[in-house]
Length: 356
Ligand code: ADP
Ligand code: MG
Image (cartoon, rainbow, N blue to C red):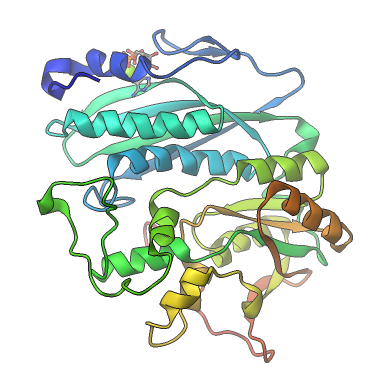
């Protein structure tokens, strides 16, 4: 992309610049450039729609988050919402409020990252909105997906006796964030240099921790579990599902509340990465709270009848994703965490909440 300034390019120049790389898809009849996009739903499918905002200094910091991975994450968090319904992600709208002094290079890299995530998941960028911002970069992504009505997995389907499962490992993103917030490391990789003034000093906290790049990736470039979500929908194995964006406890509580059930989670069953276990040695006490209440894992939590256990294991093996049963749905309300000696784990249950 030829570089000039945002002020020279203007709103429509920037839209053209984004549109030039947006690609096309058979389901998009009219994409970027008209008053509304026209898309074709597949036969018999229902539309799934979700929207998310990412605000500078609330959800991301420009000093930690390189623009390419910020672009990827902006779409990944929305794909994760479609995955959590068992849907197939299809179309996205990208709205940007941009500070006047944001370098055009930043926007080019952001767009490149956004579109790389879009391509990986066969999502077409079909429109958006572009304006200036007086207080930081604001990114808003609306995603649409589709699925047959009988396959859509809601939060409300959990039943007493169902197993509670989670994909992948929990807490890596929150661990990385806590290290960065304590000034203990740098999220920059040598491949993506940033002006020296923006770099955080690479502290000693992550030094000697094997796989620290993996921690950084979990926070800055999460992988939405789209294939798993869809596979669970197509096989009908799960009874309820949610993506873990605010921490397992808070997110499972949402399932429990709308399903009118409760749950018991076993602390020793919570899947942790080797890197997490390694880094945990540097904490005064084992940081279970990061795995239970730390946000931004973008793994899936789902419930399923015990009878489906073996089938779920085979499905996960086929998808190449670790999946772990971590507890049981109960008929009595409330979500409790039990330690290996049967005691109640005392925790501060709340995940991230913007207004508390
Ligand atoms: P309107 O005046 O109807 O709001 P705009 O001038 O904002 O239309 O947008 C023109 C076209 O460009 C529309 O198709 C819109 O969806 C698309 N568009 C605007 N901003 C973006 C963006 N950031 N990314 C992708 N498409 C965009
Ligand atoms: Mg507009």
